[in-house]
Image (cartoon, rainbow, N blue to C red; front, top):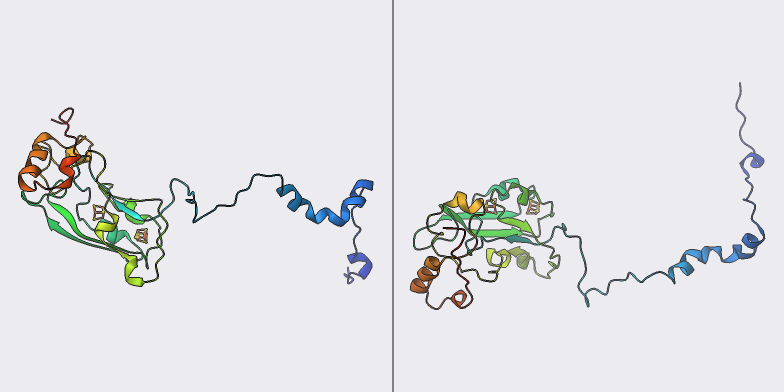
Length: 218
Ligand code: SF4
Ligand code: SF4
């Protein structure tokens, strides 16, 4: 069976029949979406004059978190750096000592850099972190005119002290080990920790705001 080429008549089509109203409004039908939008709520964001809203799980700037007594959660294990597909993280660990205990256990992250010229905000680093030290905030305002400013140092991503925390270094909560910290048994700084800081750094600003707790962790 031969197939004939379609003629102009075959390719023509009939326009849908419109009613009287349809014919009447046809010339301005294209404005329908625009006109309907006049009566909908305005969704224009006034950023940067007003803060922009992002979803709660948005991946923004990284944050290194703390335990409730102020010690850092990062133990300098470098798993985040190894997991990063863009090689954007640099970690250098150091040993804690009785005079300088920054995190529970033996090691802490002495150097921590995130290179935001490389980071693709995939979140694999935070998945790899065994202590939940590393999370990602909702802060997306990372643009800068200088490349060197986009390599963030530890002090730029370390979480500030929350209300009642005691600035490290200071000893761990007496009688608890790093496993107890991971399990959430620490609820705040103890009087002994506060006393230690008062003795070694009497001018530490966090001494003015610290709220020692004794219950539920001794
Ligand atoms: S979010 Fe992804 S690319 Fe960015 S530092 Fe973490 S693992 Fe690397
Ligand atoms: S942020 Fe987490 S994974 Fe990275 S070095 Fe610190 S403890 Fe290890």
